[in-house]
Amino acid sequence: MKGVAPLFAVFALGAAATAQAQTYPARPITMIVPYASGGPTDVIGRIVAERMRTSLGQPIIVDNVGGASGSIGTGRLAHSASDGYTFGVGSWPTHVVNGAVYSLQYDLINDFAPIALITEGPLLIVAKKALPAKDLKELIGWLKANPDKASQGTVGAGSSPHVAGIFFQKQAGTRFQFVPYRGLGPAMQDLLSGQIDIMIDNPANSLPQIRAGTINAFAVTAKTRVAAEPNIPTVDEAGLPGLYVSVWYALFAPKGTPENIITKLNAAAMDALADSAVRRRLADLAQEIPPYVQQTPQALGAYQKAEIDKWWPIIKAANIKGE
Image (tube, rainbow, N blue to C red; front, side):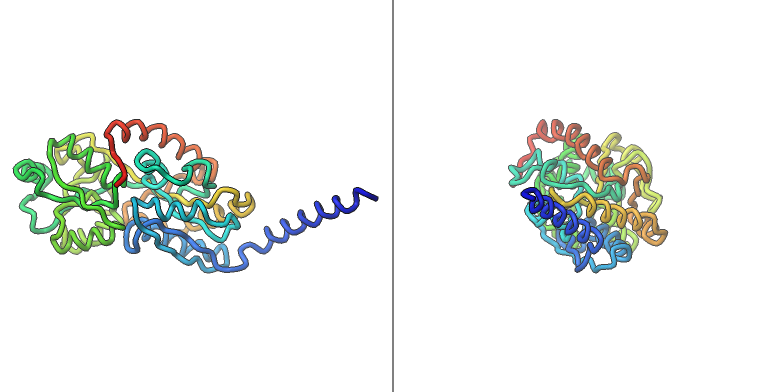
């Protein structure tokens, strides 16, 4: 009879876990976006979360926590309760680049549970309307004629715009200043008002302004043009060949989040990415949805590790340091 109590305790714990699995989610879920509202991470995250709530049956509340190239919000996610009621949007800057740039208070691999890779897309080289350049070659010529006078908006050291800007400088032989913002949304506002001169920006942030005619677009940082705005040439076509930078977005939970909950969140994300309306909205932002086999938690974990192995040596060689 001595073993009855321990066996009963084990049974009770198992029953509780099963009940949790069946009832999750029983209340609203928080999604941490590690940048200011209005930027590409925020826009893409909200599009996917809006459809995920249909599958999960609960609201998803967006919590924008900007600063330090997304490392502040990502740190908050790392230290959140692993009960499935907090997950976050991660990206190439937050879950790859930041590890080579900042002294983080969390581990990019071991402190997170991958949920799903959601989109990937190139960047756009854009400038304020008043800039006296009609194409990329003229922009480079103007930058060379005005060394250290121009400014590019970024979201901090090691962010995708910052890394792309450094590569741009080296490849084009130019020099300009970097101005950090809490998000690409605020940076775009200053580009529109003429406070900064250029951005190397996510299409989700720039395309609405390009279509409105309020900024100029010079090139796509990819080998192919984006279907959402096919008139914008590639960097190869525009005169700066090989300047390829692609940014991916994914969902992560804190480490220790139960596997059954990760499975539910992944299924909800996959349902969202299969929805025709979601696919149209993401395509309109020049975002490519990965194939089904690349949307699993295991595939995301392997992809993140491969990206760290690829980019950390490049970033460290460029001596990019957190501010």
